[in-house]
Length: 93
Image (cartoon, rainbow, N blue to C red; front, side, top):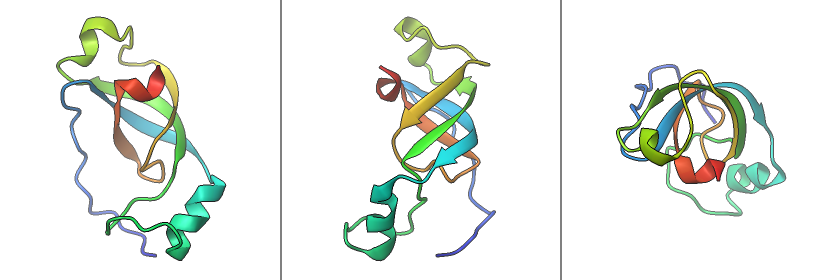
């Protein structure tokens, strides 16, 4: 495992929102990905549970999601160890 700070911040596309993570949970399944028990593409940003603040909306996320910049959110997905992560709106439904 490596600690890296040179990842570009991904802008949200379509029905995604950009979340600035403030907390991440260490889900038991994270240990399976780390150990290789569950295969996953590499490189990988770990973290299956996160919470933070929405800082940007994708072009289609504004229409019907009811989400807005500044909203506090909790999600179950991937990449919660990152500082910023684009999360599909469907993760909040």
